[in-house]
Length: 112
Image (cartoon, rainbow, N blue to C red; front, side, top):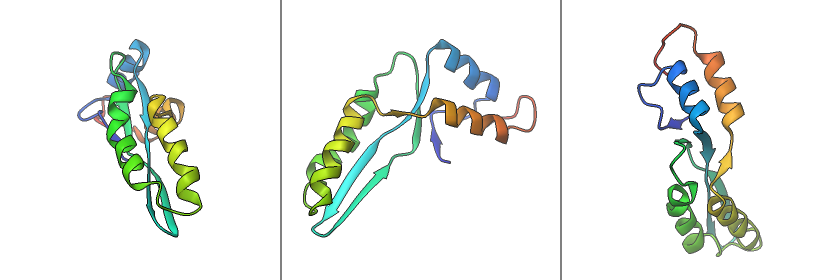
């Protein structure tokens, strides 16, 4: 699992940020080439309590709006879904990522 925003943080640091209101989210983007449409997630990002997911998702939204519509029939279906996910702040996966971090942290104070 590729995580952004937790460089040099311990599990205790991540837990403290989550208690403060941070959350883990991912964004989606859609790229189409006539008969092939790809809908992919971004890396999981730690959004601090004062960060807007809308702003962090804008690059993925722009990619989808420019390159997503061109596939038939799935580009027309997947592009609005990806844009909606991004404009609503991303898809929250805090519980899943936290469980993964707990299971992968074997030592106390280990840097993630």
